Length: 210
Picture 1 (spheres, rainbow, N blue to C red):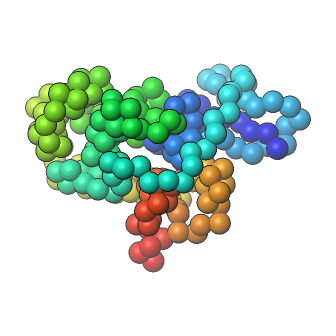
Picture 2 (cartoon, rainbow, N blue to C red; picture 1 turned 180 degrees about the vertical axis):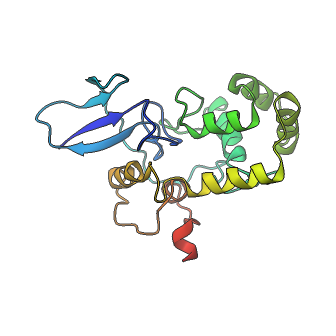
C-alpha cells in the first residue's frame, strides 16, 4: 500500500497537532490516507496536483518526562501548558525527535492556540524561555494578545478536547492510530486521546464518558 499526505486542506488533516512534516502521533501535521496507487508516496498540494512527500516514521509509545497531557489546564485553558512544555523541553534538548513545535501549518495545535490568544509564536517562545510560571506567561499572553472571555474558553476547550471525534479529521486520526499500532483501541477517539495513549496515559475523551 502507498499513501497520500494531504496538506493545506480543511478536510482530514485539519486541526492536527503533530510532528514536523506530518500529524499528531506526532506524525501529527500531515494526514496520510492508504491508497492502492502503484508507486511512490505523494502529497496533495493546493491546486489539486500531486508532489512527492517524504515518509515520517511514527513516534514510539513512551512517556516523555515534563510533557503534560493536552487536557491539563492553565488558567482554565486546555493545551496551553503542553505547548509551553514542548518549548522548554526542546530548548533543553529533551523533547524527543519528531515532536512538532511551531506554527508552520495553520491546523497545528500550536497554531490554533497562538491564534486563539492572538500572540506570535516567536514572541511566546522568547517569553517562555525567559522564565516564569505558566500563569505568568498566560498573563503575558493576555496583555500582549487578548484575554478570551469565559464563553470563548469553554468553546475552545470543547473544540480541542473533541477534535478528531466525528469530524473532518476523524479519518486522519484513525490512519495515525494504525501507524503507531493503536488501531484496535476503541477508547481513542480524539487527538487528545491519541497524545495521551502515545505517552502512556489513559485517554479521557468522549469514549470514556459514554
